[in-house]
Image (tube, rainbow, N blue to C red; front, side, top):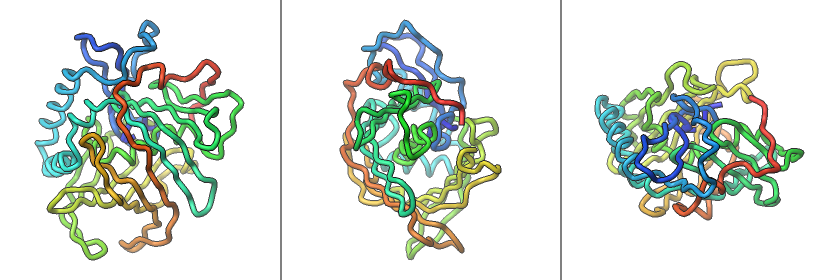
Length: 313
């Protein structure tokens, strides 16, 4: 698993405790939409952290992380374009200083069971807690070390380990590509469905998470630098048990709206992708109830007492 970005994302993601002036917790990288996306070691176990510790990171930690990202990304053409896109969507400082992100993610495949959950995401440490929309007593997530499910005997029609951070990674593009471990390439301008875009490709350093072979290609408007679509191919073992990558898909980024200064798409469509064109529609995704919730604490995202840890795949 990646951790999501990736994104997580999933590519640098770790544990925050209280808002003291200690060294900031390591941030894990936004690599791919799974769980183990971090380019750093997983967050240290800290049983002394009070469950009422805030999830929102200390602003000084955010400032240091953002300064590092700006310096690193400014060294390449692709990084400079990514920075423009991040700023066009509200900026890294605002994204992290807003605190945890809550949203409902209603994914409706044309073939297969729906995946409709309410999610609380610790954007600083890439931890996640989901509840099923139609069965709120059933929860699952990722605590920075392990995926979990509650109650222990709950059955889901999808892989909860894979799904714990996958939606967040897609929702939080382009922000989740700003961390170390992400390799960016500028592919120039490309015409797509009658519009010319700036195109950057994101891959990952070897050993980054469980799926360093994931690939994301971002289509950015050449004037606004807003994200309009992505192509992606995943290498998560649960999706591609025989190895290699999944078939390339195209995802649209539609109906943008701004929440506490951060602009996110509120709907997506996923298509097959053949001969440089979108093919058959595969899924429709609707985001709602989107809000940053800076008041949330560690207790809101850690597994409940009736949870059990999930195996590795």
